[in-house]
Image (tube, rainbow, N blue to C red; front, side):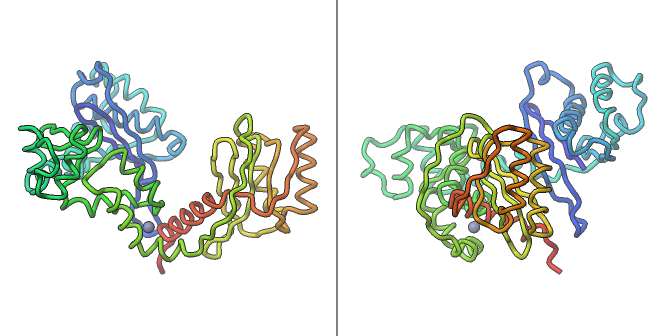
Length: 366
Ligand SMILES: [Zn+2]
């Protein structure tokens, strides 16, 4: 199912997949702003463009399947489902022709108010009620005091230090390109920032792209320290000495390959040394043959690497070496190197955590 929507300035789409528990969950998102000429389109044309563009973005998932397009614009439903092509306006005709590649039906879903605009309205409302932010806004309008000692509140003092970056746009405070979040909404925002259970610096980096409030850095650190999921899963992490590997000349030249076991399920993990691209495949048996079979499938997609770095696991012995040699005949250069640990320790931790998280998320509880 594809859910698409258009606003005055942009298009957005989301592909939803039905899970085992019959719930629809988002799999991928897409978003872009409209070009100046597209901004002059009628609303129905914008909505149709959003549907067409989203289908085109997700075509790898949608090809050959029946697709339901969800829209909050009612007139779009008959346009896609019933209306003959030659009855539609000219611009819609062109868009509908682009949609013909997909086997789709439109469905009307009333807007829930969870749109970005709805969130902005909420931020605006809460900013006006937030004591500290009201003070900050008045300082922005009438000028900041020369010295921070003239300010009583310590939180406002933190804003004083950032006065060069703070501004007020239509009732919403901004810090550079980031939106200043009122105190009441911060807990919810922390939850979103730490949604993927990444570490403190990654979470701070994520926040730095969109939101700010005085003391956000320490709030994130405190939140993560208290996160029960991270505490239970991260305790298994251990520090390993850092071994530097020179950067290969191009992508997919040198790969690290390792096996992982998470919650009783086996995975093969391939990491490209150049781009840090990660390939994870689930497999049933941990034999050399299973490993070779998965590697062959991956190499069919991405090409044969020159070097595969593996550990001394039993799957990477005789049979695997023969496989590497046969690949080397095709490629003239494929070799295998042995190391005790192939993946960077940080990466191992992140992978382990990500797998754990995904398994908890997508495995039915019963
Ligand atoms: Zn966490």
